[in-house]
Image 1 (cartoon, helix red, strand yellow):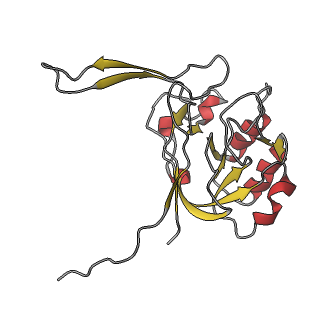
Image 2 (image 1 turned 30 degrees about the vertical axis):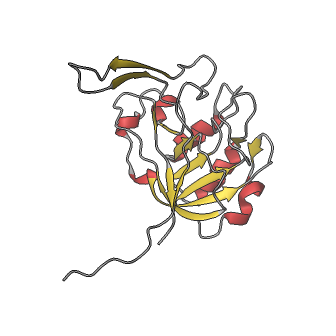
Length: 215
């Protein structure tokens, strides 16, 4: 008779914001909309919706194509960076940019993925949010990470035109997640699961990002 697995399931944290008509996007970007294409009724056995959205809606993975022509699309990304051990670092109330000293307390024995919680209550609003200083990404790249995530709309300020932090990601081959919700996540180590869709020509992909308790 096979042995029974009596271990408790590992705790999950859903770190994705809702995706609907209220989801914020960069000013001028495509807002979420949804219409019923097929309707369940006599002669039609299913409901099928038609959805229009920016690939940067909700929690999402930017592809290098987003900030450099000729680079990889979302569908061409290696999935490995989006799955595995990660560390959530709290840097709440740090101002407009996460700087190296804001995360220095949590850099020992760093796993390959880092998620930055900058706010006590995450917001997707573009009018005011914390981005990541380029020197912070340089520091993390020197720690051999593969992915960085943040609970704000972008790693660069909304007014930036040269996107220095995005280009630091490109220079170091780092992957990025934006618009995460880390409100209920304590500082510490977890397993990250946040796979982008295989959108073969898209510059980003929505993800259903979750954290799982380590075994």
